[in-house]
Length: 222
Image (cartoon, rainbow, N blue to C red; front, side, top):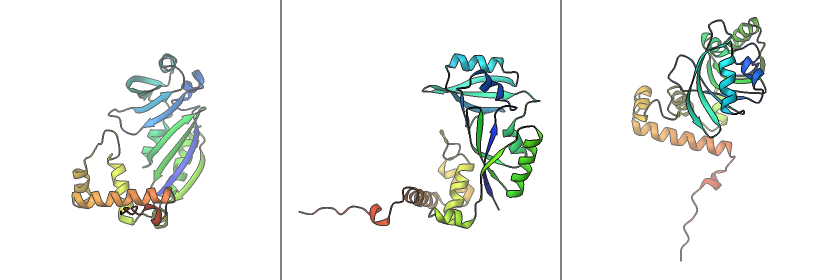
C-alpha cells in the first residue's frame, strides 16, 4: 500500500550543509521540473552575491548554474560531488518520489511517496548509516479512506496522481491534456470532466464549503 512520509533531516552532512554554514539565513526549495542531471533548487534569503559566494566555496558542490529568477529568489541547477551525501538520490534509489522539499534554519523537510511502510524503514536506515539521522514527522497510508475523506472517488484520485506524476500541473506543463488522456485510456472530454469534478471536491473539502454555499445564486426577477 502506497505511503506518504514527511521526514526532517539536518542539512549538516549533506550536499547543502556548507551552504547553511556560510549563509544561515538561506532558504532552499526543490524545483520539481528541471532538465538536468543535477537538482533544481530555489535559493533565497541572503543576497544573490552571498549565495554565489557560498556555492563557489562549497566543497560538496561540483557545479552550479543559474536557470531562472523570481522576485528575490534564484533557481540554480546544482550537481553535488560524487562522494557527497545526496538524500534526494538516495530516496530515488529506494524507489521513493520526492513530492516536495524545502529547507530553512539548516533543516530539510521532505514529503516522500513510497511503495509501503517497509520502504520508509529501509530509507531511514540508509540515511542513518550515512550519518544523516532523519526524524519522521508524519507517516500515513494512501488508503481508500484517505481520498474519500477529501470527497474524491478512486478514479478522480488516480487521475490527479497521474497528472502530477506526468507533470500536468507544472509550469510549463510537461504533458498536454490530450497526451494525459491517451495515457489514461480515456477521452479528452472525460479527462476534462473528471479533473473539474476532482478540483471541485478538493476545494469544497479544504474550504469546508457546504452544497448550499456552492449552489448558484438565484437570479433576481423584477
